[in-house]
Image (cartoon, rainbow, N blue to C red; front, side, top):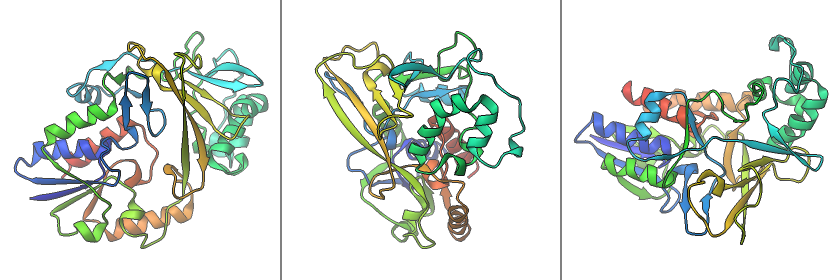
Length: 343
């Protein structure tokens, strides 16, 4: 049996491992467009100077014990509880806000047509404007009153004295040697081949099984058109100091063109780095930047996605880009478990 996996990110590497358990004698070939990179958007490096995640901040958090135990077979995890700040009017405020800081109105989201009206009614215009409106407009490049409620309806409001960003997730942390080394360990156990080259459906259509984890429109040569994304450009800056900011991530909802600054060293507090590195994220509409956020509510994009999946039913779509969804690492692995187990 010959299997092709498109993409060496967490979904692709996990697929390879699970398929090896399922088909012991299969020939598994992984194709990755980023030369010498395993881990997809989780790709990272740890040096004596600093920790660097190349495609924005990635923190593992989940309440799924099966996913947690699976990853812990390949790496130990550093204890890390994610906390976020927000730069507003020259001051840094913690987010999410606490339930005693904002009046939460119980409303029916089906009564509202857009994110702005919904949040204005739920938590008030002042909090909406300070924390969410301009951040969302910067992030998506779309007026807040044209964004769907699904963009904001899961905004967390924490209990008093709860500062963690993911307080409901039982398992949280950062792989001790980074996400790339975690993915490499999974890859080694999968006994697969990897080829760093850009390929399309025509190149692999003779395989017995095709697993797609990359961009579905690109893989099929945009036959039915391009899906809409909001892209990101990352700007890194090194400092000869050990501490740049008090939070690992600080959002900038109202000032500057970037949306947030990440200081990665704070993810691995047990390591002693000589310097620090920060990353500024700039949302763009530039096709050459990284496609990070699918504009999934766009009717035309959903029609295009449907055309691809209906015509190419012999391709198994797994993960974020192939399914045109924005999902966290744990959900990507859950999705992989379900898809591979169903084969």
